[in-house]
Image (cartoon, rainbow, N blue to C red; front, side):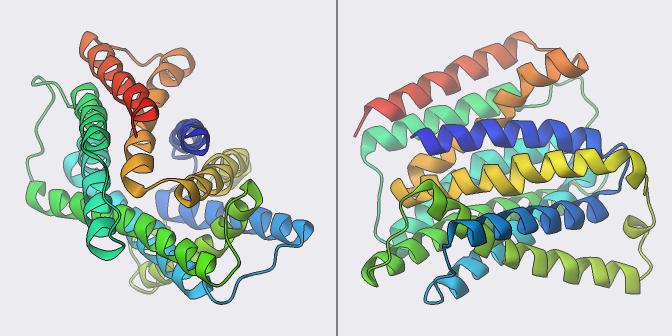
Length: 300
């Protein structure tokens, strides 16, 4: 469970730094920049540790990165402007775990126990309650269906990406080169991020050729570079390394519900750092999610 908790903490810092980064650099440029920097850090660490690429599972981890990092993140950024950040997060966090659990059951035949499934459902219910937009918040006037489809696709890709990683670790175990340690998590994150970079760079190239506004937006690199580094280290580097480490030791149905509490971990940070208001519904949903996490750590 420890790797999943560490991933949640790092991802929460990634969200905060990402919010600050958005003030200086447009999303598409920032995403490519942070992935390239994170890949450089991860690659250098892998080289220093002497942990070479396991070519037998590299294609599978690369595919996992293309699906989860690449298509999943791109779909998420398409959902944001259509249905809003809060609805997008609720949709993705509450669907990624069920999608991942279903795919893992159908493909790898790993199913959670009844108590584990119940605790996972409690966690997701708590996240949904805490993040659900209030009735007074303006409803999206256009793009509701399209935004919902993009958010659902992002959730499906995140769940599928996690299961594809689990498949890679099973293949490595069979080949006599098991992935178990934190160093293996860094190695897997490096191989996976290469897939994410490939999809992101291709999409960025498409936007440039099509002269889309996303690549001609904010470009204040002088003031934004420090946030690029902070976001890259917290998210794609340290966060994903712990996330992959967690998937090496626990089923998708255990890891994804815990990681789904990331938005709840962001809220106190955003409250103290940026003055965001915490409501009674946030507290209620957070308490419910924490109870589910505690239950998930105790049941078998």
